[in-house]
Length: 205
Image 1 (cartoon, rainbow, N blue to C red):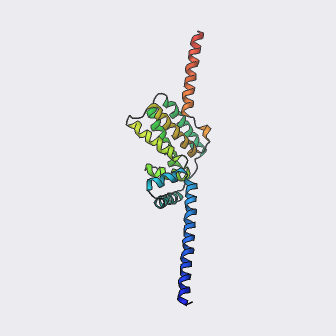
Image 2: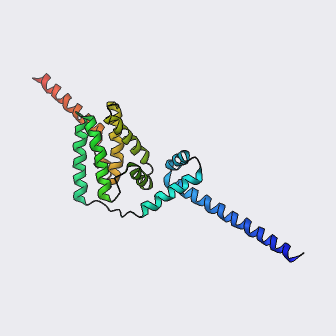
């Protein structure tokens, strides 16, 4: 067999091997991104229209996130935020719209103190999706309801959902454990109990 034939065969083999390596590398990258982002991966693929574009976007998110200098909160700062959240939760009873706005601001304040950029909502979502992909959709929903609330288009139940979603992210950002951050439903239950107690006292008079 002529030498040039062997050269062609060798070149074809090299191309095939490189294609296999490239395909395997891409598959591993896709699996890694799916494991990291979960449902956010599928959402990004749907929005981008194709897997390659979506994966470039997700890799860019990771790259930007890796450049951040994130830091934990001091115990004093953490306690202060917990107290502010308790005030926000209490406010929900009489002023749901104001409580939603406060919850949104509190999440941004915590993010900023931790070292996240906070000027742009899309950037906040991007960074949260890297650290907390299981909560990023709740953050989107909470923010969307907050915008509806500003326009006077959100029901009280909508706003309750918004505060619940903000709370889930807020608790994780504080890194205090979910039980240390009061739930809006706990506030309602507590106030209902107070009303019941008052009624019982009135009956005994």
